[in-house]
Length: 441
Image (cartoon, rainbow, N blue to C red; front, top):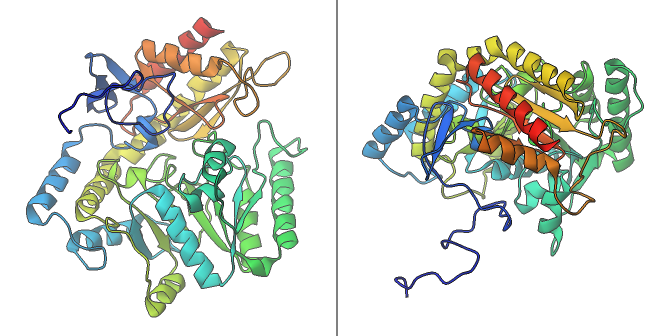
């Protein structure tokens, strides 16, 4: 019966959180304002991971709330097979800020589904089955997007009982813990691009529809590519007639200092996927943008797939308002404060020998931990059992009032605050992280 109490030794209620860890009860968040959230005990935290890299405009943004309220009063839902002014307005706004090569958008619900949508369209357009993606990447946790994800902790639960086809991996151009023997950024760019070309030729270019890649690594560690790498990737795609899809689910909407991360690389993609920050996470919304010729292909042949809540009008209204907030100073705030962010993390690296690397771009950063004597992780969750001191650092920081996230793998800590974060708050977060490191190590 619905009124019977829950009888469980492990759960306080009927909800099972995502990324559920029975050894670590989930925090209950009851409120938030700007860069801060409050839990059910009234404790305030500086949210330095934007919950899941998504509350870009900060908590409690009234302009976004008002836009959603107005849309609810106008009409609450319109079929995704029909038109509505909210979708049209957001589509036009996205086209105005996207890379110049992109002109049209098809909406989805989540980042995973946006990547699956883009892959479906790309495979149909190119009439080829394969999509290439990087090891040490994250593209989602549904079957199709999970097959593209290079993180084994995501793929293994999905593929334990079934797997997909057409997923091929290549090595990333990481500067730290690199799989390539390179002494300079230029050598790394050349070696990584040469490796990608080998994979393309080995698989057979005619069998490859697209390359799917994050322009700056997201939860896998905020890796930036060495200068020249993405220019070479674009050249390879042109040479072998392969589509370049950039996954901007985390890197989009100001997080890296421009509207989209790929714009900080100066490369024009063929498709772009987005989610998270498009509404500042105030409502679920995602989508895929594409070149005019790809859009014409979809329109001319029709599209027999869709989602009930793809392009939900309330989400689209939130998206229009969020884009206005980003344009009204939030992206500029990232540009003006990112140097202080980078310098603070560099100082943290100098002052703590267990910090092996601090990296990133804009408001997407990572701190990597390693044993200074061996250069190896203190605990690698892919191969080691037992307690992970990196997670202990996150817990210590939380006890001190700042929320950070674990990267994939959890040999690193992610820092991705709302775009409204001030230099004083950046200093507070880095000081707190330093104190947490001292407490654990």
